[in-house]
Image (cartoon, rainbow, N blue to C red; front, top):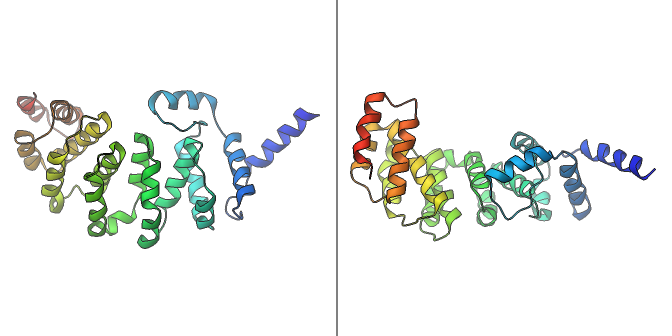
Amino acid sequence: MKEIIRIDIIVLVSVMDLKNIIWNKKTYQEFIDYLKSIREEEYKKFSEKITFTKYEMLGIRLPELRRISKEISECDYQSFLKVSESTYYEEVMIYLLVIANIKNISELMIYFDHAIALIDNWALCDTFCNSLKLVNKNKEYFLTKIDELMNSNKTYHIRVGLILLLCFYVEEKYLDLICKYLDCIKSDEYYVNMAEAWLVCEIFIKYESVGLKYLEHNELNKFTINKSISKIRDSYRVDKEMKEYILKFKR
């Protein structure tokens, strides 16, 4: 009898109506039960191999987390944000995506610093940043926050700044500023250096002459410059001759 009751509960939770929910501690716990009911053990094992985080993983795919966050964002998301907790990786991801879905810039910035403080791995960082579509329409406004992040000594503050630049600022107007930021970073943190390399690669692909000039004169550490060259050479958007030429900048 107990097993039958448990199955019924799981089925019920799996069809939770997120658009019409009234958020409080009780319904938030029901929400966590819902997340547990749709987890995939094999996907959890896979995710744990590529994402290192202090949060416990359930094993829910990103498209599903995006769907859930979209439904929450279409109702009383402010109440959701008030009761939200951070035990599980997936609930943190949903929290970040709900914030990224906010349409008003002043309201978004109320939550922004707390959102950044929750980020402890590349997946939370990159997904949050590339979901912040509001940045694209408010680039000058966000530059102040990016400047603050880039001058931080915290790994994921810097990476957030770099990924925002990568996602929204790789255009002629901002290239000099981006190169200055890259040269000012003095970090040997892997996830900072990888983001730097990714950014250098994107600049090279979109603005080859600027990219070449930067490869020749930069303040990047050995790992980052070599990784940048490797990423450029991996791109199908760079011709074979150029891939060979840029090897001269390898250290």
